[in-house]
Image (cartoon, rainbow, N blue to C red):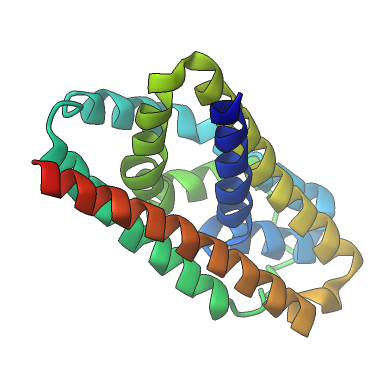
Amino acid sequence: MADVAAAALAGATLGLSAGLAPGPLLTLVLSQTLAHGPREGVKVALAPILTDAPIILAAWLVLSRFAGTPGILGVVALAGALLLCRYGWDCFKAPPPNAGDPHTAPRSILRGVAANFANPHPYLFWAAVGVPFLLDTAASGVVPVVVFLTVFYGCIVGAKVAAALLAGRFRQFLSSRAYRLFMAGLGLSLFFFAYGFARQGFSLLAGA
């Protein structure tokens, strides 16, 4: 039960952080919302569900081959720690979004899918953070893995949907102090997970 709770907590924290951290997809969610309304922003928010499965599968197949090689997994864990630190730092200096062109056709789903496939963040996240966590979690059974993925995608998509709805209803919030404080809180949560990955990485390298 503790493993399921830990997987749910990790999925919620990483999902919310990934959903609201600055990046091409969130920028597109907000710009489409400001230009065409919340409905178009919500369509963009669904992109991770449509694009991430092959990324996760490829990273799983590659990294599972190195399950008995602690040195390589240690390097991957340290890379994940650095990536999370980068994302955390980005949260502290997130600029307010700009509105897109309201005169162009929205094509929000197509734009969202294209932006997510071209975005390096999902590839780096799943290779260095997500799949290593799943491989470690899989030792406790299938249920924690399913819980992590369900909560993670519920939170990453839900966070972007919430961002679209808030941007459509309260545009001034995106330039407010409350928004900056909220993003700073997400940044701190990413630093916490980065610390855990760094500890795991050094531990694996020590045992290599």
